[in-house]
Length: 367
Image (cartoon, rainbow, N blue to C red; front, top):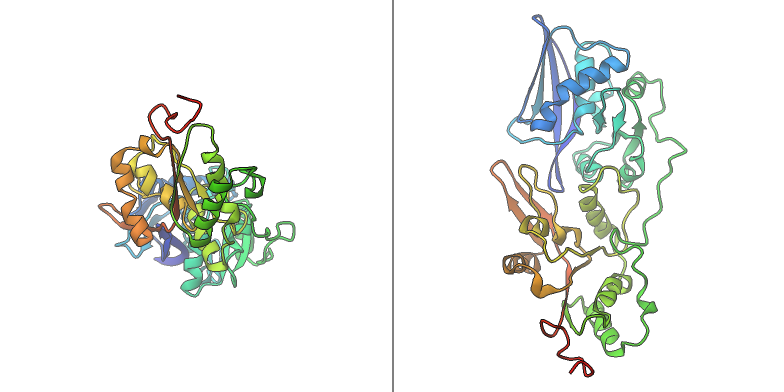
């Protein structure tokens, strides 16, 4: 029996746990068993990895192959384990050397053609890896800028499984490609970009002063007025007069948004974000949730920024009531049968509403 292992990260919320992907080959009929509490997308990695290895011009182990994700008691989800599973299987078959595998974190989804695809959560995964003492990582091409936001992490990006094999054989540089530099910190939040600047507001002296006081003290505020008087315009521009995020806060915000998309984070977010859920939002969309993997909700996407509820009375009462916990504690905890997930949710709440159902109660010309 031949043993080999690679390293990856299991994410529960923004917290990461190092996972050792063990592979063992033994004599017997060719078959692949994946154990260690994998979810459906991860269990399907067996077939993705087998096809990707063939596309790279190599053969999948022609023996009984067992892959174990340690610690086995921790639920694991996501396709970012593909790269580590393929590397461990090839190392167990003695196709690639094992020297670098024990000290390198591998993140990436494999396509059937061997391409390495972007994945969610690269930043929080590598923050957890650095905390655990790892300083080298391989990530999908196009996500190196996000990965290099983690100081002290030597990052290599690969676009195909064959490139990873070259790296492990020492035939490719382990540092990031020169044509993919680290992006400068962002000066616009992910949802506040294109919203304009507070200095563009003309008139509205009392409302502007109220917003400035709210920004100075990070006070929650309710905007009440007739339709079209500028409530939404003022609220959308509030993040532009809030202080920029410091490095720790910026990493927190960027890590949360990294969990929401595939390779969309390219820079450190230094401007407070703006989250604007529609009044038809569900409980899960507001505070976070999901069937198996709990994703961040609107309150977490507004962490260190502004949560704007336009037409506040139209929101379901139970959704508004759910804001009490995050407002008091600064975080939200989502419980599922397999795991408990905690997301940060320290935000400034801005609510806008009309004075009456028709909206014209305060309109002097409206009768």
